[in-house]
Amino acid sequence: MQRSTLWLILGILGLLPTIAAADDTQPPTLETIARTGTIRLGYADRNLPFSYLGTGPEPIGYSIELCLKVADSIKKKLGLTELKIDFVKRTPSNRITLLNDGTIDMECVASTNTEERRKAVWFSYSHFITGTRYVALKSSGMNSVGDLAGRTVVVTTGTINISQLNVLNRKLGLNIAVLQNDSTEGSFDMVTENRASAFVMDDILLRSFVAETGRPDDYSISNEYLAPPQPYGLMLRYGDTDFKNTVNEALGHIYASGEIERIYDKWFNAPIPPNGINLKRPLPGDLAEVFRKPLDTTAE
Image (spheres, rainbow, N blue to C red):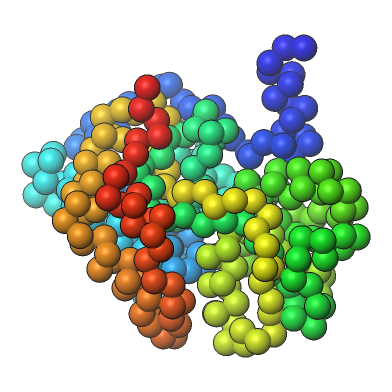
């Protein structure tokens, strides 16, 4: 069987995340930024606390702040007197395409760095680590992986959670009816509205959605991981070594200086705008180690 045919079959079965091939015709990112005086940052409007809309027209959040600091470093490196920030809304299903067709230069949300994704995009140094769980209404009494058996479960299109759930479903014979929704907020709403028994997603994002409702006691998050913790990174165009190195250099300085600890606490261990939600998640040891010794996952 040809490799292209195999990939097509795997994609249909949901075993691979949605990916799009890099566009080799795109000019180097730093060259485009220098020529246009603009950097285009991909954002999400409801991905608290990484990238979301507060009370203003522009996104805020942990990933957004890191990207803005990287952009300032790029501005200085290129000797620009000013650098315009162009925010472009992306979705889980189109983010890779927007990167590789040149619509955005860097994705500033919460994308998991996986081996399969690195065949289509590159990632910066990791800036977060989280695992996969599910959220359900507390009234359902669901807490464990086994409780998913025979249930209708929703996942968001374009996320790795689809393949994770499909693998678990087959491995354990859970007979889950898997639904897909185009947005994370839409997926969560399906649980709230009793249109799905559970929503499978990254642990930190589920906790953020629950906190945003103002009714956290109405929900329960599984006491077991459906898949082990994996790192997040800023997603970058595939094959652009100079830009990747520039981004990592900027992040490396933020990490080495200790500034990352202040930024982390601001978004994960203190009240955040606009409603003063506090996720109360102190910096975990595994992430602190990543900040001490960042790794370039695309290094050859």
